[in-house]
Amino acid sequence: MKRKGYAGSQLRLHLDKRTAAIEDLSWEAIDNYLGGTGYAAKLLYDEQKPGLDPLKAESKFVFSTGPLTLNKIPGGGSVALCFKSPLSNTWCESRAGSDFGPDMRRAG
Image (cartoon, rainbow, N blue to C red; front, side):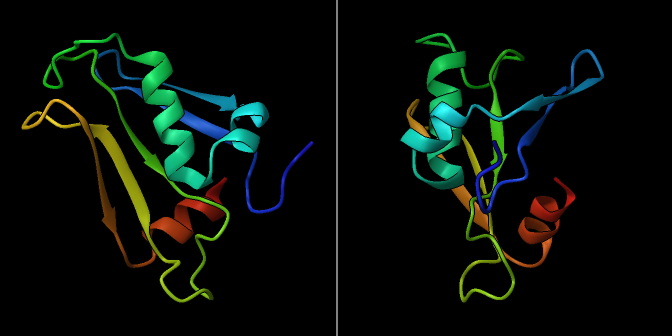
């Protein structure tokens, strides 16, 4: 069942293999972790090995949007980039504005 504000799928790209796959979102994770950044944190925590060097090919970064990523909402036109920082070796998040976040969300 789709939740309001979510398209229901995620795109997984493997840049080293040059492959792409569309996957269903984990509704359990959506229900338990707040917004796109919460979902990204869950993905990184579950899918990356502890101690992984952030600059290795196996390291992941997640572009995420949440249910409030809309141009109509003040401050809602952003996309979050979530990853393990090479500087601090801990969680890092960066945001970008403009239409990219809302366009990505509308694309599904």
